[in-house]
Image (cartoon, rainbow, N blue to C red; front, side, top):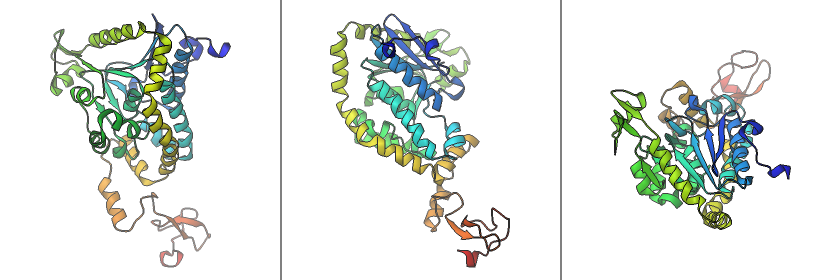
Length: 353
């Protein structure tokens, strides 16, 4: 049937991701290095297309997901796009979350073992993406991090649902509430990944347990340091070879059975999360968090808390819609406005609220 006929990247008309099939392995590469491989709305559509195609292609035994370059695997949703589009049209975020849900489910439900090749930092929805995969290998210069509560969002696209399954309750709360980087060694110890491989070299020689300073110099290619993903590729190839030498339908059903708790947590919460996130986009927290990200400054966390403690509203940028203009009769003017936004007249604040 035409619907199940395998296609090439060209036939799928992919622009923001790479898609290759070689020796029974399909590789899906998020190709937005200019934004540290953050996915856009269009990326989510393309990612789901690729995973679904690989699912239908009987020549494919294993799927590998990765990012372009050596700086980032995926850093989640594009916050610049969020700030530009969804803080202005919050109801459209509900539509966006529908695309995100389809993308995540295309990983979980493709019937093929899926490996996350973590070639760089893994942030926000990037971690949720690798959690959706069956197996994961991380390069030593990378790290894992959630950022939801730091940018005015909640990591309920997989992280709040699954981290307790992977690392336990206390560690999950630490990851989600502190938003601090998790090193590869800690990620391995906690069960976030299956394997860590060296990726920092000095004069062409791999360094085991590279320091943060060595990683910094390697990313900048200073003093003979560099990032080399050869061992990451070797580890991924070893893992794909092991998976290819297994019975296909038994592997598929093993994946389905092992997805039980992930499916249960996901389907019990994602619809609610989709609605709550889209409604929350109307409030001040995501506006402040994402504007701060775009402006490259620290969010004003304390200012918002103080405002709320003083009886103010953090649901509205300029306060609730409570004034009326005595001149033009415009209604619903924010409480913090001193002048009418329609005719410019000074408001009678004592008599209009």
